[in-house]
Image 1 (cartoon, helix red, strand yellow):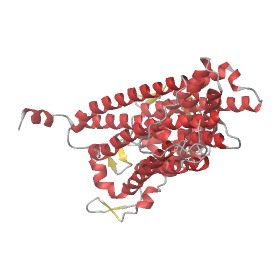
Image 2 (cartoon, rainbow, N blue to C red):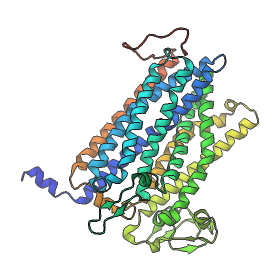
Image 3 (cartoon, rainbow, N blue to C red):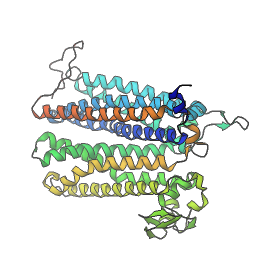
Image 4 (tube, helix red, strand yellow):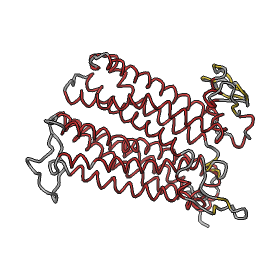
Length: 467
């Protein structure tokens, strides 16, 4: 045995598990933002494009759609890289999961791959269709992008939902392996639709607020032109609508946990012991097995979990210590997400109130200041929600069936791939910022950055959808 092999064999298993967890967390945290753009951004482009070709046409709206499509192409390319990395990581980091349950969750992964390729094809058609396709035909090429993006995202979320609510199989009593696999039932598990609805609305919040914050920043710096005004109004409209509906989907998703994942709910709510009239604990930490420093509002936690103020909420005292997630982390991330989401919902109400009164949004300086902050805040809220979902399921990778320790690789590759992943995503982030800033700078100078098509058909002047 070589010296390197001896050193590798002495690496503690917990170090490998830690590296695998951190690598997966970084990959998911990076990719989920890009996935949100793939899900929601085409809808913003569709609205701008449709406005651009209706009636006598709106060159500003059409130019906005053209620019946004190029931004979407850059983000899609980066998302393709991070998504490919994730697909490899599922097998490399968690062979215990894929080896045992691959047959159960294989269908949504396969469908997501098909949806991805369809999305890529029609993004190419849409990008190269500028000045080559009639306006309405060109607009309709966005529909397959919207559909494939939605289907692909649902497929991946359904796998995560299945991890939280496993179904669609039976366990062999002798081998412990799944038998009688029903892939459709596994895909449409009890958690899938609610998780997808929550993410779908979260995607429109993130993309809408983030795009609006970019234009709000420009408006505050004196770039008060038709392009910035329209871009801001389209984006903020989507975000403000989603922000008001999101609390409903979050409430329904949370109620599912009452009976299906009580340990996760107990950690989120910092429920120390099982009780009726359970209080909502705002803030606070669990120290030495006791909840300290929190503000308690009697009965509210029971009502949120069961729709009754005297409803029973399972506490951490009825959950074995070995099956409890990191309570303080889950509680803090959950309440931070809810707090930011509530502020964004209040901001959305402010938007609709200003609009109802017929006032010009851009004449409200405080509103623009808040809009600049709302974009990054939406990103933070999404990441916090993802941490709550994933960490709250610990120590299980498949709820109450397979732990992360059983699923993680027995090799030591995560110790080497983790730093490589950090470098890769740092490079992708820097590259995205450099490219997008370069594009924005050229747009401000009047260039449209037409994509070269040396083998494509020539522009059809007279039938073109120009800017």
